[in-house]
Image (cartoon, rainbow, N blue to C red):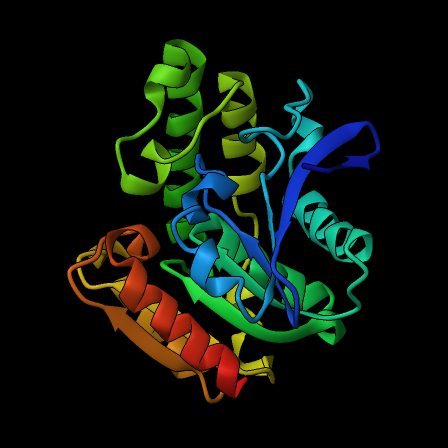
Length: 251
C-alpha cells in the first residue's frame, strides 16, 4: 500500500473501490484496520480512502512532540485528498477521527461534500471541562510511557489493530488528543453540508455529545446502532454499513 511523505513523516494509506470519495479516519489507538470488515460492502459504490494517523499503526512515529497536532492532522487530510486526486470528499471519522473531521471542515469547508461523525464529540466550550479532558489524555500518555503497548485498551476497534510504537501513541495523546480552545464546538452551527451522526446504543459516554452535535448542526441526521458499543462498525457491521450507505445515497 502507498505512503505519503509529509515533511519526512511517512503516512500510510489505502484506497478501496471507486466512485465518489470518502476519507475515513480512525480514532485514537486504532488504525485503518478497524474498517476491514466493512470495506467489501462499502467499497462497491464508493472510493474509500483509509489511513493510519501519525503515531499509529503503519505510519511513522516521530520522536518530537511538535510533530503531533490538530493542525498537522488537518494538513495530512488535505494532502491525502491531493494524493488521491480528490478536490472534495465526504469526510468521515470515528472518535478522535471525528473530531479531526470537524477540524478539517472548519479549515477547508470547500473540500467537504458531507460529514459522517461516528461515536465522537466536538470538544468543550468551558476551560474546566477541557482541562479535565486534557488531564485524561496526559494520563493515557503516561500509561504508554510506562507500560509500552501493554497500555493499549481492550475495546473492539483497538483489538482489531496493530501498532509499532508506544512512544508514538504517547506523543499522539499529548499532541492530538489534547484540546486548547472551543473553536470546533463553536463551529457546529456554521456547517452547511449533509451530516450523519452515529452512536452505538451502549456507548453512553458519547450520548450527550451526539445529541448536542445533532441539535447544533443544521439538518444533521442521528442514527443509533442497536446493541453496539464505541465501535458500531465492528459490533454491528451490517446495520452500520446500511446506515452509512443510505446516508451517502441521499447526500
